[in-house]
Amino acid sequence: MDKKIVKLDSIERLKEELVKNNLYLPISEDIKVLRNPVNIGDKTIPNRIGIHPMEGCDGTKDGKPDELTIRRYDRFAKSGAGLLWLEATAVVNEGRANSRQLFINEDTKEDFKKLVTRIKQTAKDNYGEENIPYTVMQLTHSGRYSKPKDKPEPIIAAENEYLDPFLPKDYKTITDGELEALEDSYVKAAILAKETGIDAVDIKSCHRYLNSELLSAHLRSGKYGGSFENRTRFLIHIVDKIKSAVGEELDVTLRMNAYDAIPYPYGFGVDKQDFRKPDLYEPVRLIKMLRDRGIKLINISCGNPYYNPHIGRPYDLGPYNPLTTPLFNTVLMLNVVKTLQESVPEVAIVATGLSWLKDLSPYVAAGGIKEGWFKIAGFGRQAFAYPEFAKDILETGRLERSKCCICCSKCTEIMRTGGKAGCVIKDSEIYLPIYKQGITGEVNLNSDRIAEHI
Image (tube, rainbow, N blue to C red; front, side, top):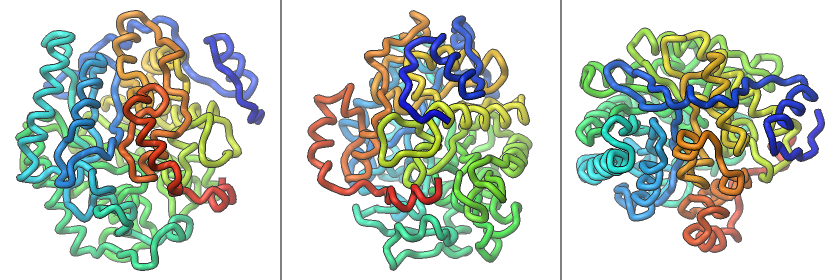
């Protein structure tokens, strides 16, 4: 495959590159389908554009939304997106990914309530009652990436020969008893989340944080490892317990890694002989179990931003040069989404991987929905760089290329060096000084080691 950087500056150029590389993406210049609502039970997502959970690392030390957090969600609320997925919010202090990660508890609940109320009121003021976004709070335990005091304090679910070399020697393996107790911490967090006015909670199951790691814990012993039933036990128990506690008052969903791209037996959703290929038998089996429990919305992701970010966040500039092109990785991810959506047509699957397409993304989003690849087009980095992107798509049918995310990975670099995350390029007044302050630190990626396996 030709790895030369190609400027995809028109639909025709995109189609040419797809044909040249024997790839396919659904494309439609008629974006009206993106304006259609989606029903999630008795609630409605007012349009087909969503903003993914993206952590700002800018809460207060005790886990409340701070000034930059509020600024970010003000911008997202004004974006026009029908689905607003709030960032990773810890359920226990030791599971925070950084000392400023949001953390919901009795002491912070009212601050989250103010944030949720503000989001909905801002959207109402800008777009009317019928366009208030459906909101999701992502509940998390960071597992091997826990760093509650700004130094690594990893808590792993299972050993992993590809990821463990990045850990300090004093890491801890969580016990079955601790996992069982943690299930109840998720339930307590969900009950508090309901009181904030949020529409749904996400039991975060992606990017190799704790629950994602459990899904691939083939080599773990005990009741949370080994068999498929054991590896999914933690997630299923949490879903069942939350539903038992709150009934239909709060929706339950998840952002799930469907394809880890880490060799078996350490990866979930991977071909046992060639980890570069997805094997979606188990992810499909899992989402059918979740559907049968009343889950109506699932957000799909792939890869690990700490280990193989090119899989889930195709980039033009990044920490290493992958063997595959960003276009290939975008197509791969969207095909994973397609397979899952086709397996559960009654569930609304949120697509990932559109931001790299920049101003061409609305046409792939519309094409994907028309051809049944997914029901909601999700955007991550694009919302950092271009917060009014959804409004522009829905009102004008297009994006301005000059405003789009350039996929330079600097928002990720800020996180790795301990800063508050945002777009260094398009929001430079706020984030360029933060980026410069941390740039002398090391990005938490071992490029040479990764290159051996991709």
